[in-house]
Length: 115
Length: 113
Picture: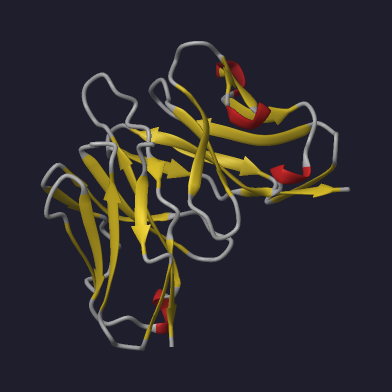
């Protein structure tokens, strides 16, 4: 089955220690998104890649970076995690063209704990 | 800009009862609307979507939603609740100008035995 995969599902890091979260997809979608979701809140878009074009949300802290080395993979780097960065991180993909609805499909998420 | 409002942060129904989760949208253009479900410690799963075809949209797990332009609503319903329906439900609208989707604040559905 085509899908969005996130690894690891649970990640523990120390305050200030860089961490990388991984997302891969077999849907061959041209857009990949990263969201942060805190408890009992809606997902908050951090940024997305449309093909190789990076689109950052205006309120995303500089502490969050992303890389997309190819169509299938996208990474979220948190350079110096703070306690406030503990959250669920969701990756999503969509197929964007002039005829599509740009429907987003989500991975299972990575729950990040910062000690 | 488009937006959605979900009425009721928490809805509780008895098993076998009707489920009704409310969503109202605001959009200056014909909207694309979505309902997603999220189980604990999981990602979001697409339940259904409205893309300006039929106004009554059927989704997975027995859910459906009706697009009502006159009421700017896209409420989610299920005739008979099951214990496995307990989850968080998000209504969303596509923001075509910004190429992203805007989520509502979510409604937590609880099912009483």
